[in-house]
Structure formats: C-alpha cells, structure tokens
Length: 84
Image (cartoon, rainbow, N blue to C red; front, side, top):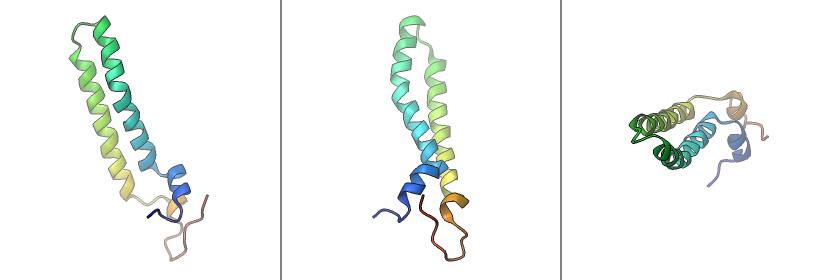
C-alpha cells in the first residue's frame, strides 16, 4: 500500500534522490569500466571508486530515510502532510 502523499515523497525525499543516484552509478559502472578497459589496461581504481560511491550513496539514502523532512512530514502534531 502506498503512503497517502506518495507524490510529495517522490518529489522531495532525499532518500529517493540518493537511491536514484545510486541506481545511476550501478547502471553506469559496467559501461564506464568497459570504456576504461579499452583505453587503460586493468584499471582497478576505477572499479573500486565506482563501488565505493555506490555504497556510500546507499548508506546516505538509509540515513536520509530516518530523518524528518519538513516538506514531507508536516508539522508532526497530528496534521497530515500537505500533498504536493
């Protein structure tokens, strides 16, 4: 079941934004590694850096998920958040 303000969550939640960046890194990693492998012989630093960036973005998304975001959560006094 979706949350009532799912449009606002998709638009404003930092966890969603960070997971989208992590997904972009996951998609670009094989392409970037292939291109780098054709120009640079066995560059392990590129693969390691892309994996570290992806992991850090995923951890940041988890952390961002537990913090209150005023745009989405509302006043936290029983009022529902405004739909955007």
